[in-house]
Image (cartoon, rainbow, N blue to C red; front, top):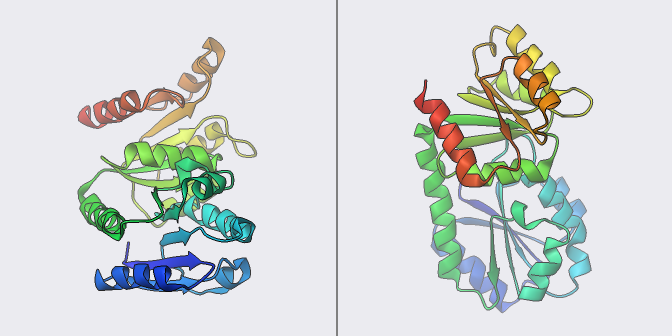
Amino acid sequence: MDKRILFVSENHNFLVSAMEKSLVDSHFEVIPAQPDLVEIQLRANLPDIYIVYLEGDLNNFNGTLKYLKKLVTEDGKDRVLYLIGNPMEINAAYEIVPKSVVSASFSRPVNMKDVINKLNTLILDDFESQGKKRILVVDDDGILLRSMKNRLSPKYDVFMANSGVSAISFLTQNHVDLILLDYEMPVVSGLQVFEMLKSEDLTKDIPVIFLTAKDDRETVMKVLAAKPEKYLLKNMPADELIKSIDDFFKGK
């Protein structure tokens, strides 16, 4: 992840200019933008870091926030969204972009040292992830994808795909050490994706763990019949999920 930031604000006033200067002084490249959906969509080579400064008529931010949510939860992309505003403005933004999708929020008046420290930690974590095991999470639910990424990213390098087709496309160009695959996806089911993965020389040796929201006997028997490495429940506590993944890699 590079050090470019899309900084979205309605008014380019003194406070916004001061925040942008603090970021530039900390060696970030700031790309200012209005909360204009068309303008942002037409920009070429958008950064992977987004900061939205909420002030004024919050309705003007709705389209932009929805679009940034889409970018953050897009297949295989490692992007982050930060919000700056007062508590009421931030809570209003959460009505459009769920809290699980927002990497951090900062109440106004904001201490820019806190923002810059968070950004520097992000860049450092991205650099250190080069030595981590790589996991691809495949699920049609973008919110769940982001939640899984947030839970696993402290220990693993996590990528996301919201369909089987996207997962296979991603795997043609990227190596991973494990696939966490939703068993109950619509259109192309997790079982069908699993069979496609195992039929291709490029992906047949990648271990697959099924994710399922159901733990009834019938579902479990169907999942196990496919002979994945194991299965995990989507609603299991974060510490149990991480331990299960840790134990899997320890057993290899």
